[in-house]
Length: 90
Image 1 (cartoon, rainbow, N blue to C red):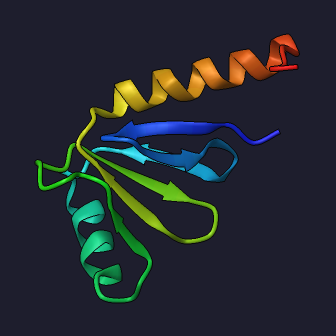
Image 2 (cartoon, helix red, strand yellow):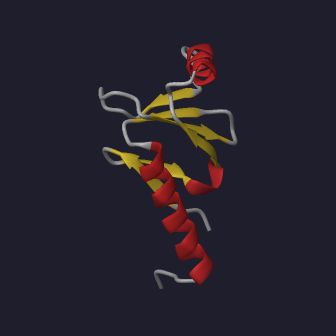
């Protein structure tokens, strides 16, 4: 079952679609972000703040987040742990 991960400011991403969460400081990541600008595959979820993480999805979208990659990774791990326990909302 899909879980939604909060990536800041009320924006969420499907946890099953996340391939990687990377820092935007590396040159290859900067080039990747520049290459998808204007294509409709870049989603800016920073609300005007500094980009601290880039989320790569399985459907070739990039999501920019103002949260640290470690924060998003922790939330992702918590969502997976919740799934592994077999808990449900019912």
